[in-house]
Every structure is written in structure tokens, then in C-alpha cells.
Length: 180
Ligand code: 5GP
Ligand code: MG
Image: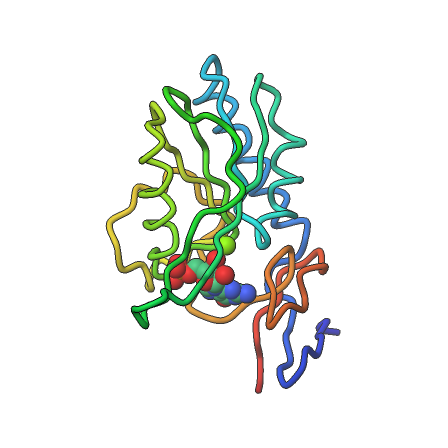
């Protein structure tokens, strides 16, 4: 029987079981271990969505590295009506370093583009991007996303760190919305 969950007004069904997720996490970790050996990278997890992916990914990284966490805070500009996403919680000096952004999902890519711009201002040697999920049909900006665990269609998903209105982050599988 198909496993479904109900969150608020929506029903979701399992679309990517944990075992499938972890197989792709294994693959991405192996690529990172190979490509970044000797670089002493700083892995920067973007909270909240990437917490579960980050934990599973870091358990599989066996090269010397540092691990840290940042957040993107949306706020309403004082005079403008545009919403700006500001980087908060960065405590490390990035100058000359190899930085690896770890994200849950890249949709339009605007969030990631903004994050890369803000991190670049700290003058790292190199910024790499790792994402658990990519919606290739939605990508609007030119980003070099070198490490993608899974490509998915343009449907709304929850679980494995991702939320619907704050709920659903705790599930170990990924679910896709099936009805409203
Ligand atoms: P972007 O700026 O790339 O359009 O959006 C990225 C952000 O949108 C993600 O960090 C995430 O918060 C949210 N997002 C995009 N697609 C989904 C989805 O299918 N499910 C969930 N839970 N969040 C999504
Ligand atoms: Mg995110």
C-alpha cells in the first residue's frame, strides 16, 4: 500500500524512499571525497532545510574538513517592498578557503544565486555547490551546480528536511503532494 501523510490541507505520498536517497548521498559523498581531497573544505549547510541531508552527507565525508551552518533570513526592506534574503550566522573567515554550500533544493535558483554573491564577498578561493534536489525545468539563473543528488519534476515535495508551512521536516522519506 502506498504510504501517505496529511499535512494541513494537503496529502502527500512517498516519492523517494530513504534507501534511494541514501544511495545518491553515497554517490555525491564519494565525488566530494575524490574532488576535494587536500583542500580542507568548509562545508556550509543552509538551515533549516538541509539539516538531514547535511548529517547523512557528513557521515560519509572522510577527508579533513570543517562543518558549519548558516541561515538565510527573509526580511522586508525598510523602504523597498522587495524581499531580501540576508545571510546570517556566518562565523568563519572564508578568505582563501574552499567553501562547499550544502542546500536542500534548488528551484528557480534565485536563493542560491543570492547566497553565492554574499559568500563571494568574503573572498573564498572557490565556492562549490551541493544540492540534495534540483528541479531542472524551473532553473532561471546561470549557476554551476556541480553536485546534485537527485533531479526531480516540478512538484511540491516535503520530508527529509523539507517542510510545508513548518511541518514535515522530520520524515525520513521524500513525499510529493498528491492532492489539495
Ligand atoms: P529558489 O530560490 O531556488 O526558487 O527556491 C529555493 C527554496 O524554495 C528552497 O530553499 C525551499 O525553501 C523552497 N522550495 C522550492 N521547491 C520546494 C519544494 O518542492 N518543497 C519545499 N518544501 N520547498 C521548496
Ligand atoms: Mg534551502
